[in-house]
Length: 203
Length: 269
Image (cartoon, rainbow over all chains, first blue to last red):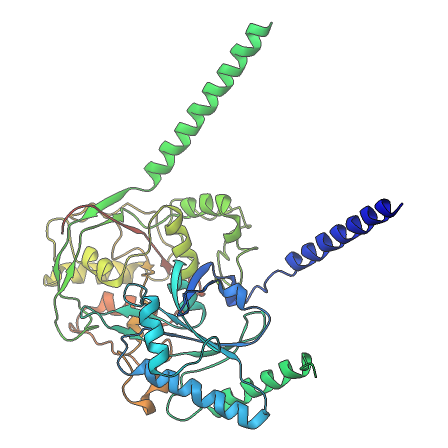
């Protein structure tokens, strides 16, 4: 009798898990999600991940290359300022940051770890990632970023700091460096406060 | 009886194999690539500093732009690129819009015409499907600088004038079939006069080099602040082409923009 009950319970659990799994698969990424990109990334702590694995929380994304003399350090500073402004305005932590390199030839995990330590970017709040597999130029293009290598080895590129929602849809983007873009700070603040309200911290 | 069945199966297998071979052969014939020998090249655009010669390595390029027929075959085998399935992220409104249906051209569209109304993302996916990619701008410009006998015909005013005249005469008309002009030195057709073509790095042609002045960086949007200048101010057909590309987002589809693909070759430049 006990054995029958155990079997029934096990069966119920397995059916229920199966259904939950199916439901998760059914919630496919929205048509305008940049997480549709088939890209495999490796971060400065050797962690492999896909853009789709970032699903569930808003993220700030930008693209860089480690040997970039000026624009990329300025981009990192701008994101630091945006996050500080959001934290002081809302009292909530600003979203995680993912910086994707478009120079996988030179940007090894060590180079990215060096960049993170030079700019004092704590892991895993800041993930600096290199493309391992897939089409990084297409991923960049979905963010509005384009780049080309110049004959001297550095890159012509534009800067986009992009706020993605929990499903990888673009909420806002800015190219403003120097002082934080107030509209962008607004959007990040709103989404941070909303995220915090939706998942209240346990006592 | 049993013998017949085996024989029947053997015949069926033979027919299938022959069909498969025929299809493969057809696909190969559809995608003819020609070798473009490498060399030093001075672009008409000063993308990387004025009149700096660039070394172009040898590569192989599709002899003609990708045709509507080629692209129809592609959406059959890659249904995620049908116009009713391609996500907005990769193909905006206008993608294959003049086709009669997702898998039907309709009688008005000649399958031998160059395919247009394809986004940059879609063009890249097509090229990847035949182990190729979109050319870089320098590769395209280098290959297009040749006429039937010269690697670089750009200094010949008669050559440029001929291209311009053809372009003007064709403006406002639907494109003709691919491959009807005289091939250039490499065996490439339709490089200058049939259709504008996507290149892989087109969007980056319109952004400035590494941003140095923080106050200027808000200009560095996709099609904004540009480091682009024309070295040769009389290269009108190239200017028209670059202007057409500069107006495009990578999701956009235009009736005037098609593409062709390139592959690496093992040959030394």
